[in-house]
Image (cartoon, rainbow, N blue to C red; front, side, top):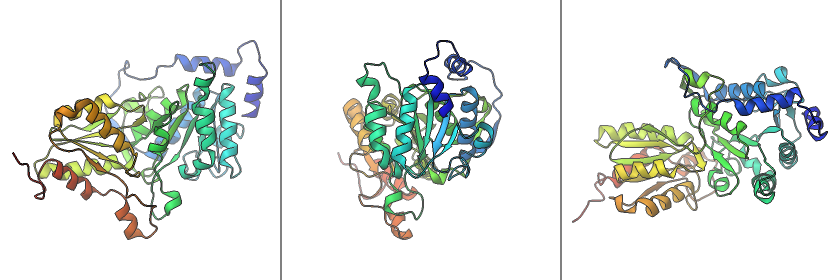
Length: 377
């Protein structure tokens, strides 16, 4: 990494092999929509999807490098960077001391000089140590330089609650970073999300906060042939309708998408057709897809693991009230984490975060099927 940085700062006037690589990267298609593929799908874990996306982007562009605690010799705390040190060497897979402020700052500085760092936080709770670099350096530099400085950096790692890790390791930062102009905030759910969104994040000219979920790393999902192509990439700022429905819209992201889909199956047995939207992107937020869905279903339920006050769900509700209020047939419903620090005890922890039965109960309430709320003339 230092060798590449020295070459960049040195101001060489001719294109180096690295320079050629970066220029070729710009010519690569960002999606595979124009190619013909078989529709056959295979299974892949989210962990392998992230690992393969990193590997392919590092192979395609020598300016991409990975930096963080235990990303090299230990091959990543969650093995996302497995095999990359042997393949690309210690200049591009950089182990760091336990100093998030230090290596996040180095990453931002290297991005100023044209490199494409991927900074791994062992958990996004530790990003609090580096938040000044993420917000005041990475997010604001393009604006403050009148567009002269791009900061193509990715901050990635597990976000939100896992299991039994207590209040200081369980927080969801989607709403925190989603409120900051200059950042893009992505939240993959499936393996295809993980591959396509991470590739998009690495290729993007702006700083991207990439919020993964620890409990999803080992989950397997079908992956299409299109998604396995090295040119595959998903558009930033576009949600995905995971399940179509006509009675209520349920928005969710990350692990909660799976919960929403399971709740939709239960609701189907009770005669309620739920449309489930996988947000994929918190900033920019795909308001158009959400509002089109609500204008069809006339009801909205948002689901997230973060705190309720000033949360992602609150922003979605505000958007729908502003743009589609006349289409609503019931009050909007929000399901979120409890407004308390995360308990350590397993029984209390379960009560602190949304469960499938909570989603079902709220959807039935919105559809006036709960028995406790009856529509009146």
